[in-house]
Amino acid sequence: MLTRRTMIGGTAATALPLASSVASSDSAQASETNLNEGVKPMDLDRAFVRIEEGLVHYRHAGEGAADGSLPLYMMHAGPGSSKGLTGLVTALAETRYCIAADTLGFGESVPPTPEEPDLIYYADSVIRIWDKLGLDKVDVYGGHTGANIGMEIAIAHPDRVRKLVFDGVALFDPALAADMLENYAPKIKPQANGEHFIWAWNFMRDMGLYFPYYMRDKEHYLGKEPWPTGSLHSSVMEVMKALDHYYKGYNAVFRHKTHDRLPLITVPTFCMAHEADPLHVSVEEAAALVPNSEHLVLPFNSCTQDKADAIANYLDA
Image (cartoon, rainbow, N blue to C red; front, side):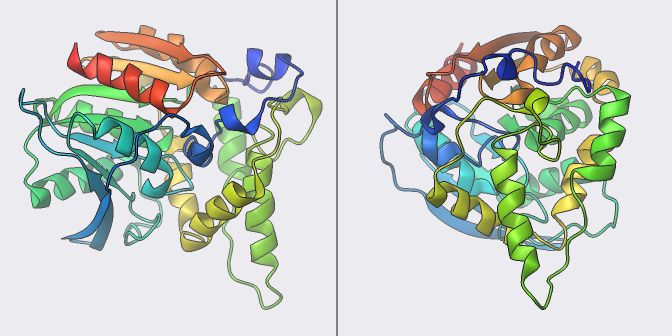
């Protein structure tokens, strides 16, 4: 369990800066572009689908496999979009059809309707996307916020999920969850002097250095070098797209009773994370709570292709 004192476990204990080429983060895909070494290039297409709230944007690649493998539906971490999953999508699409949508309120997708949507609402929106796309049954991947949404989909619709993959799932103790609900995702509005741009830059920069990002001290230092400026700029631009409502997805996770919900999952589940991801310390505990699960922590020197291989091996087993 992640607490105020032990939330990053062995990550900070390294006390040595980690190269950005192996970095991961709270926004697990925010630094995905730094992990793409070894990924084969593949054409990736973009499209929209309309649900009740409006247009939902998604990226997709690959084709249905000859062996009948199901499509893989992929959900990104906050505060980014499916753009951060590009490397992983193209790697996995070598052997299966992959769809990665922008969660409501992120990227190019319409925002959620409620002021305080819960994860059951986000999960329902995904089911409605599947219905419009004609996806009857799929494998599911979710990173961070996407993992929490994925668990609610699997709980409510086990008949539509064959296998579930968590890439970092948060198990916060109540005190930390309450603190993050209060401080992690403030409501931000555009300011005449442009200071909201500075906020977004610092928000993403500090997210790569501390966990939680607003606790900027030695205890909460992730032991990593800052993200390269280009990658940071790309992540900030995604935050700016979601500025008016990015906090809704975060707060849904902080309110989520993850410990109580994980045991309700009945589909086969793979709990994984990169060792540079602060949530990697929850992998074993999360797996212990899911009845039919496996778990893996990828080492610091692993890249996107390694992650893709681990996911593909699990799905194909």
